[in-house]
Image (cartoon, rainbow, N blue to C red; front, side, top):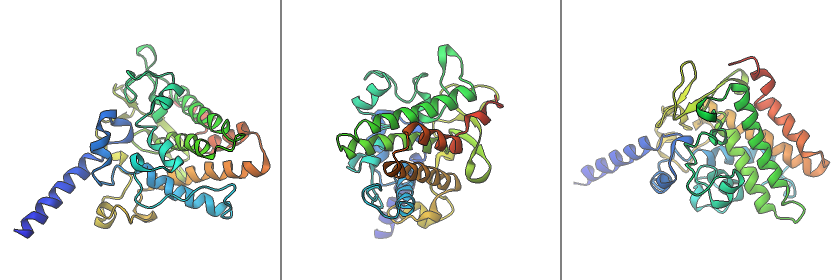
Length: 288
């Protein structure tokens, strides 16, 4: 009887893990309870990508508390975390009224399917029934990252580091989405070359498509039971290469922002430099 109970438990867990593979851009707001509280860590990816990114950035910043970031605990979940980077990251997929207002979205706006908001998930917008080009999408994605960081910077003069880091967390989410193979096709060392942005909700011939349930959104290796089921103890080697690239890119941005607090370099130049390395819209100009 105990063996059967264990078998049923594992089957149930595997089922929940399987449905959790759906990508961050493919969920409706009302699904959040099911998808984020099953303990099936194939979905809990942005938190861990951010956790590794913070560790890398803090090391690069010499462990300084004044310019570094609060470490992200292993096993943290977005909806029950008070960590500002994690909260801003999580609410990029499950937006609060404040997040919606930042994009002119109403409570009725379908956050994941609205044709004017696809760039928030590093996907192609659908203007007036058409499909945005690669260049237009790259510029929109970079613009959203810059907008989030500009909003973050408005909280620094008052010493509000919580909201400063919250909006950095949102910028990280957009950048991280751009490294998912379900959202963007990348090539080169650490995926630094953008080959094409995908669509979601509308298929277009010759353009990659993000499926409703898309295994390419999987953050964790599927060839290791430890990496699949030991969701609170996953190490760097458990990440698929694209997720590692996303963590490195996130650490790049966090490090630059931390160093800026010492150098007082204009935010615009910091953002431009990071986006040149991680999106490089000038290179995207030559692609469809």
